[in-house]
Length: 395
Ligand SMILES: Cc1cc2nc3c(=O)[nH]c(=O)nc-3n(C[C@H](O)[C@H](O)[C@H](O)COP(=O)(O)OP(=O)(O)OC[C@H]3O[C@@H](n4cnc5c(N)ncnc54)[C@H](O)[C@@H]3O)c2cc1C
Image (tube, rainbow, N blue to C red; front, top):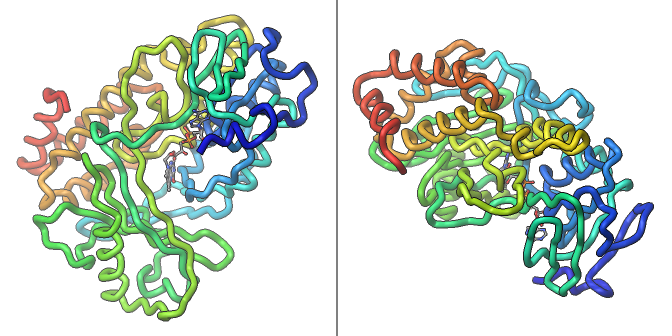
């Protein structure tokens, strides 16, 4: 649907202080106002850059349940953007483990409000073409800015590995038997979802959302393609039944359907990309929101001092970390399903700082490599073979 045509002239501005559209006066045009683009536009405007933000629906509330490790969030963001926090999330791969790392679910309306765009000229429209210094909308409107940044997110593509999941939001009391006393299951790989060891695996992700509700989500971490949502839904039903969760036939509950690429194609484009589109998505976990929020100020600082923001976003260490994590993705895609639980058990047996080095942050290739080496060193031989092959294969 071309939302750009819904409003007169395909344009609308909110809270702007300077002339509208087609003005050469803008310093920055951000195309796409998801969490990444909105954060970039917000911080750029706060730093004094004249900023335009373009999206078909700039005010659309974000529907996905976004979560992050609390220590990943940038210091400029108020802790009020978290709706729930869990000090010690749990994992069950081959045995139960407790993680010493705080995990939180973002409060999307609060994040939206915090990333306020009142100093940004927002344009309701769909970009048809992005070029150096110009964005052309589908209705022909041209937006000019000294710098254009593409934050349009990622589109499903059969060539890309993806994450899929099917989740239900249940009252805590109803979900309790599935939780087994835990507040949060970051990953629960137990096979009580009706699968056998040779089947492509999926895990239960279970997080409290506050307001006395819990999200229970059967998740295919990565696949090319990911497991179909119908399959995940069936597995979740079996798992919940096996654990004694009883959902009344007429119960009304929210459902979350998840499907998104976990890798970004490395395109050579004239326009700089940001957010998931730029590869700020972790290819082994699918997380990108915290990484994008954290990276925003590198880009904004470069823009304010006249440096190259793409170089600021991707200095050498970050490119090395990205390549290492792509090896991790290839390992996951080729891992024998019978060894998945063992693999994750070894990973979560590593000290927290080693886990963190692989899961979060983009600046430390040596620490990322050290985690991968430690995992390789301690893994059983079949897993080692997969890890070694992943470092030389191309997909
Ligand atoms: C259900 C679900 C749950 C997820 N959970 C997590 C999680 O817990 N933690 C995490 O870190 N990540 C999670 N992700 C993955 C990922 O972080 C998100 O996909 C995140 O939304 C990416 O943010 P983004 O701003 O880069 O891109 P998007 O959120 O995809 O935003 C892109 C924006 O660009 C706009 N746009 C697209 N095309 C155009 C165009 N032509 N012109 C103008 N605007 C355009 C869109 O309207 C949209 O607003 C989840 C994803 C899904 C789908």
